[in-house]
Image (tube, rainbow, N blue to C red; front, side, top):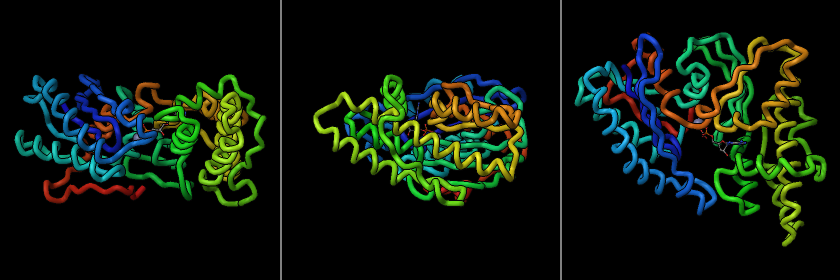
Length: 327
Ligand code: KG4
Ligand code: ZN
């Protein structure tokens, strides 16, 4: 069995995965959303303190599995430095105490493997990762053959939902809140510009759209009845930006199996628009189970199993955290 730990942002999670079968034997996550919602976003120092409280509590529940552990896997990149350290320090302590190998997992690879929790892998894949920290398209051939073919030049899809929600005083995380508000809104009420629509680049940008939402919220003033229309128009354009760029990309690289992963892959409007886009290509769409879209330790454990099989271990003194991913 492999014990896996996730603490890259605001979720403390630990899982136990059976190596031979990929079976998830244990998974527990303590989310800090409530604590950060007062601030309209994640406060790194508070997040670190909450991980220090939550992780040992979850670990206690894993005690019955300790004797069967063959390795410990932990998210080591990318994420908030102060929160990554919490998980990595705990993983190193477990590796020393139980004399088992240590595996450093890239969180983005974790999101890709959220597709394969308790399942066999399917490759090759074109993957759209949409989370709070990332918006990127990757061509994935295997665990070690991952090429990023498009990414955001500034903010991410998920973060633009968080910031838009903050501007409207809705709380955190903004994704589900904006999605809910947008349901009853008019998607065409605000004529926001689709980012980079005239650029030949296959890349993403959300800073301009965020600013346009800020202006619309300011224009609405005290009239909060306009918020649902702003939310709907924002969600429409944020999504159209992705589908327009993917359409362009598919002209040169036809999708066969396409996947959407990451916390914001839970967005129903994005899912439906991408489904439409894939229809003429007869491509298969893969999605993670809703409970595994957002950060969790089961996906880190699933990668851990693959890395264990390939003996991709880290020495205690060489596993360091890195806020930026090299993928
Ligand atoms: O993958 P994740 O849990 O954490 C990171 O690795 O960043 O993603 C969290 C992000 C947040 O920005 C959150 O607002 C967004 O995913 N999100 C959504 C939805 N659910 C979560 N964004 C849009 N629509 C949703 N339904
Ligand atoms: Zn994530």
